[in-house]
Length: 146
Image (cartoon, rainbow, N blue to C red; front, side):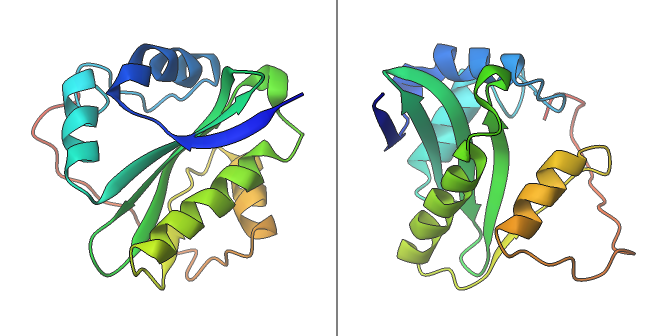
């Protein structure tokens, strides 16, 4: 079995979208921030990288690493349900951290939704600590698709 983590491009978009759907990513916005065009803009910006984990050439995991020039963020972490519990999520987190360190980021953060205890456990296993359980995540959106 061959396992590889590589940078994904817009050429991988259809496979990426399929993986996100198989993984049950419920905040997926394929007509907005997760559209082919939006992903292309994010990757071209230089502050984002999509890292994909392939097993025998099949995309089974992905993570989006981004930064705002002062802090790195891990987003859109997803592993195909048929490939979970094999350490792939942790490997993707570590790959995202390396990419962010290479960009000069000394802080890496992740937002984990309250109904995702598996993701919360993964980030804790990777050494992440909850700063303040009372922090509230607030957004202002131009549309429900962004």
